[in-house]
Figure (tube, helix red, strand yellow):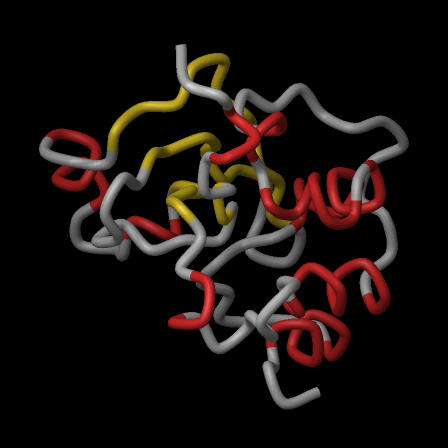
Length: 143
């Protein structure tokens, strides 16, 4: 059995074309107040799920996780994910309890920021066309 401590953590804000990507949530709510509903079991991102989102981009419908890209990501500073650091610092909690999440044990955000990341996760949408000022700042790697 493989030791998970050596596994690459999962980025919960990944793109569908990233190797090893899985769908772990479905975006619901409204455009003004999106909310993620979490799947009990993540699904691979391929075929039917991608076709089902057409004509919109899959990240408008799904939350997707993939192995962290590390230094290839604009939000990685060599040790940590600055996206989750800014998210925890700038966004208010969206939940009072950490939602059930199938990727949590391997999630970089959980490993780095713990429960505080999970409390904000339900409102995180990878492709947000009408972000609040706080969401815009949290998503900006130069902030």
